[in-house]
Length: 109
Length: 117
Image 1 (spheres, rainbow over the protein chains, first blue to last red):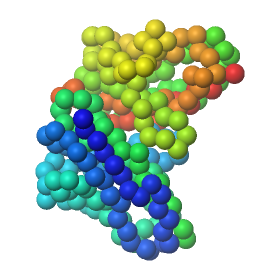
Image 2 (cartoon, rainbow over the protein chains, first blue to last red):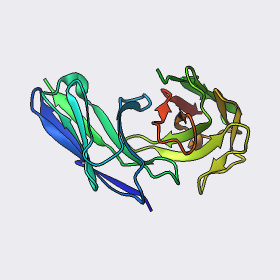
Image 3 (cartoon, chains in turn purple, cyan):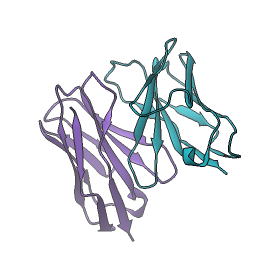
Image 4 (cartoon, chains in turn red, blue):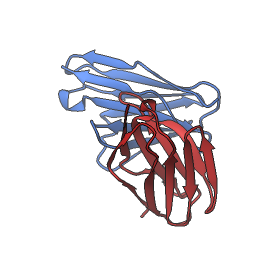
């Protein structure tokens, strides 16, 4: 059974304080790992897809990396507008996306 | 690109009413659409998967007669909550992708907050 574990559950950062969010997964044949951002009262917004170990993707202050067991979402010099819940999900081709429980990020000015 | 539109964004209605929520993919053909339910501060809970032109596949514990799903075209899926009761109050979110076995990302609507009085 595919499983996704995200840590930490919640993270509080000062503005400009870089950090990383972790997504550990077990899956029978990874076909894609996805990162989403969800703001309160909104649907998840797609950020990145990673398909194979060693792959990296960047967008503004965010950088996602992938190994065979986990993915990291690195946030460099975060701003208050980066505050949101970040969701990780995996796709193995046999079932719908399997989501982690998310990391609630708060960036304080 | 890859925009999914969901309407309405907020519904308040009386107990016993049936409520229909629409989910449209605006700039791509969505062979597969998904319906999720989300409780406060919890992750997404998949309710059902629908493929255009066929019956939806419901997750265990989801009542198919309570939550009717229709995916009649490649750009539109609807979720009808029949005879809604206060316990059906929740945040419902749809998503879509080009094909069930596609490894392309799912794109989500902005959700519908349903409140049953």
